[in-house]
Amino acid sequence: MPETSDRSLPQNAPLFVGVVVPVYNEAEGIEAFHALLRGTIDPLLERFFIYYVDDGSTDGTADKLAALSQSDPRIRVLTLVRNFGHQAALTAGLDAAEGDVVISMDGDGQHPPALIPQLLTLYRAGYAIVQTQRLDDERVGLFKKLTSRGFYWLIQKMSNTPIQPGTADFRLMSREAVEGLKRMREYHRFLRGMIPWMGFKTVILPFTPTERLAGQSKYSLRKMSKLAEDAIFSFSLLPLRIALISGALFFILALFEGVNVAIIYLQGKQYLLAPGWASLMFVSLINGGLVLVNIGIVGTYIAFILQEVKQRPIYMVREDKNRGNPAESR
Ligand code: UDP
Ligand code: MG
Image (cartoon, rainbow, N blue to C red; front, side, top):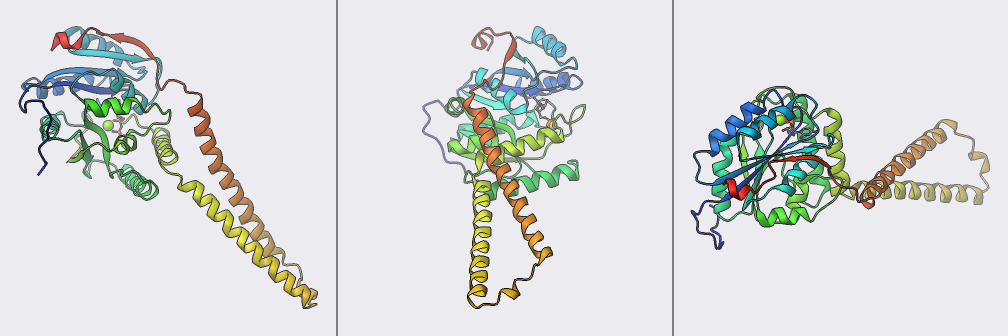
């Protein structure tokens, strides 16, 4: 059972909750999502304000969001200049969101709004972060399931930060946790690692993902690989260590070879050193390959450093609708 907190807030006082929803080309399903969300939050005592972040959609999502924000005063729409990616869009929403707590979730219906009351209950029980975890589901394709499992297995082995398998960017964060995260302005962002890194008191809430309301996944293979790369190179120095170890192994091998040749010379058995083209070629190829791979690994870290030192903004906002004071429309 969760421990109770010493938070000064009366246990049942209604909370002000910011809900952050990044969307990219979700025109087909966004209205259904909003209706679903409203259906869950309307009966609750808490006061909600919803932050939609349009991550450079090109399919009419912007018009749908504009219409929604006309009819619902509790919506703020941030439109990014272009598609900056899910993690950047989430960051834009978390930066903008007010509230005692902030909930982030996908806008495609796969993160069931029905879980929101449980997120709030766990917050009230004293957790600063309520992190949901996707349970395996038959509807998730085999490819996604395998790549996701493989990725989490790898990142858990490689990183010192406790990154739970199957965690989703569907979570509740307390105000303190959001403020903590806002101080982490890194360009390559893997929020599922950055948030546990902070170390706030966290509870995991497993859930079964629901069907997408409409359309296709917006996480292309390229986007998935970029996320995995950001996670691995920002949360682990292990690749560098592998480079060092493999380099060291070849160095030791070369030493042995040197000693071996020296002994042969000392014994006057030079005739034994008949050319072994195949074995030489083999070693040379492996060595060349390893050197290139290792330069690549070092290069990737340097590229990451380059992008960090530029200190470019993580996203750029083109339009910010209904900016007004969310507190007034509580
Ligand atoms: N998304 C985004 N920017 C992107 C890709 C996706 O804001 O570049 C949004 C998308 O609209 C959805 C959420 O991020 O609300 C998760 O994406 P999706 O459902 O496509 O990923 P999946 O559930 O397939 O992993
Ligand atoms: Mg989805």
